[in-house]
Amino acid sequence: MKYMELREQMCDICHKMWQLGWVAANDGNVSVKLPDGNFLATPTGISKSFITPDKLVIINDKGEVVEGEPGYKPSSEIKMHLRCYKEREDVGAVVHAHPATATGFAVAGKSLDRYSMIETVIAIGSIPLTPYGTPSTNEVPEAIAPYLKEHDVLLLQNHGALTVGADLITAYYRMETLELFAKISLVAELLGGAKEIDREQIDKLMYLRDNYYHVTGKHPGYKHYND
Image 1 (cartoon, one colour):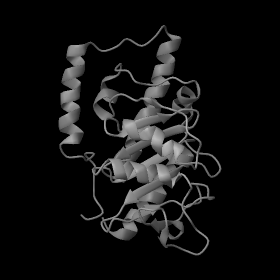
Image 2 (tube, helix red, strand yellow):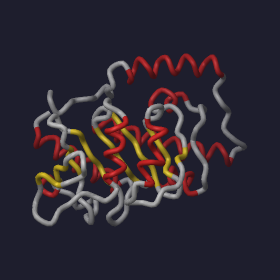
Image 3 (spheres, one colour):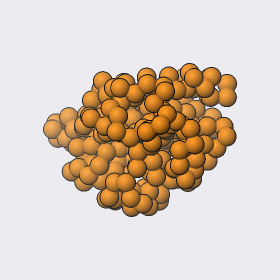
């Protein structure tokens, strides 16, 4: 994928996030790791519906802008993204959003750390609820750090959701899967509660997950910046 195509892909995903109602006003942020160790990130203070390729910024591992139009800078929540890259060498992209149903679980203090839907087990595994952290501070990176090595999808208490992936499409799809699972889980609760998959079947699904994602680190539709 060429550099300009990557910028366009990030904007396309931002527009999809807004259209799906995962973000409102200036909410949410997206970043991608570049081959030189810097990161392409969405700027603060702009609705994801209005993002264009020229508005994206390039930052270093300290969150400092190294390239971008005057006046544009990353969200103060970029600290959360940078912690993901620091903790996981396999992470190539991070998506943060506030999908309504999944965030409802986070606001209610309820995790989605359960195995009740086959596709979710394979695609994202269990989904823990991380401790509360004040946005824009180091509290959030510290709160999520213990969970990053074992999980690709996190609910942020009273905040929203965070997904990581080897590439931007994978991180985005994991957010889609999370929100659908949250909706299904909510309906299941209304119908008397979700039924857990038994342990033997979970082990089989986790084996599929390991071979589907962790061996390659890529979504089937993956195309890397270097390709």
